[in-house]
Image: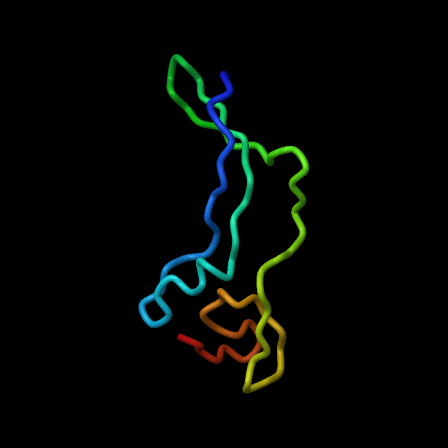
Length: 83
């Protein structure tokens, strides 16, 4: 495997109602990318000095009060739909 580059991978997803807002709030993950020169397979590794802290914004469900990640479309507890 040969080192290719260091990139920031965007987390989150684009939604129909909120557009790119979940992408902006989710942040990015720093990774080092390696490629196999023969088969061109890519492998991603967590970049140095990068932590796996949960930085996803949280939201409280208005129905049951459960705290959940902002990018979940439904409450995991009461199944209330947000989008």
